[in-house]
Amino acid sequence: MPDRTILIVGTYDTKDDELTYLAQVIRRQGGAVLTMDVSVLGDPSAPTDISKHEVAEAGGHTIAEAIAGEDENLAMQIMAKGAALMAARLHGAGRIDGVLVLGGTMGTDLALDVCCALPLGVPKYIVSTVSFSPLIPAERLPADVQMILWAGGLYGLNSVCKASLSQAAGAVLGAARAVEPPKRDRPLIGMTSFGKTVLRYMVALKPELEARGFEVAVFHATGMGGRAFESLAAQGAFAAVMDFAPQELGNHLMGSTITAGADRMTHAGRAGVPQLVAPGCYDLVDFVGWQEVPEKVRGQEIHAHNRLLSSVAMSPDQRREMAREICARLSAAKGPVTVFLPLQGCNEWDRPGAPLHDAQGLAAFVDEIRSHKADLPVIELDAHINDAAFTDAVLAVFDDWVARGLIARA
Image (cartoon, rainbow, N blue to C red; front, side, top):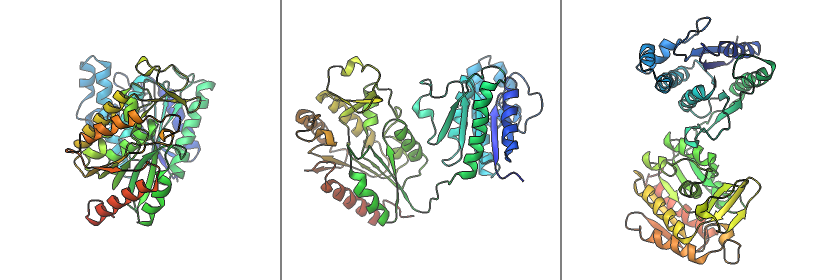
């Protein structure tokens, strides 16, 4: 008997051969397949398990409506809504263990909605002609999606595209067999940070929080890490967040393509999740290392982290802008918030004597945060963010919130 069932989604009127090939590969490896047609105009060569009519109706529409609109974008959004809702229902009923979606730009647009509808731990694979493309915004990507480039597969089967398709089929089935979904047996703390070179608080905080009975997930705040963090916060996955590296917000404000989306630092607040916040690396803007930095920050101090990533130090005015935006987003939160403000610096490179130390810039940021104290609880610390005094202060507030029931233990 097949041990895992994979949902295969695509437009069977135009990609019947490719989708059928994917199903054949999965079945040859001992897996089962459930097929979903998201076509609009045409029909598959043989009936699929879930027809295009069922997909449209799942979203409250009909194929006739999709055709009558005479708008391919509107039609695909109708199908995307229905496909996402149906995929979630199938998973909730225990009928599927993973999903594999095939498409060009239209199919990829739909695929992102389908994958976002499934929880973390459900294998999600997209085979696309635009995998890894800047066409795909960060906020559309689920926390654990996998993408494979559909090389040479624009029209019809060939040996080149079979290499991609067969890998995708094997990958999703193997993932469905191997995955260990989140257990949820301990309350989860979501933390943002960077490597130990620049921010070190997680080294002390993680074991302390685990000793208190919590699990800790640390997200690398370089765009996609923050996207995953925000996605899970929106789902209510966290008992509390320690958002100590909000640099992605600065990236967004300064026009960097290394972004977690325009909604960074909003989902935990909307969900009422308790937030402990600090401005780790607030003063740096990450840019793609092999591209020229924008005019807005040209001439400012640059730290080349590696060949992929360069960090530009913000000007005092830019730091004020960052401070205002942090406070605006946190002030709208529905749950408890506390901001920790280390007065001696917020990353290892800005200590006195370090290459990116800027006393004037730090003073501007601190002054702007202070001006919002009436709207937001702020704890000032005569310490650096990497000092023990910072982690001690964080744990003191955390323990108080636990004792008061603001952070649930289970």
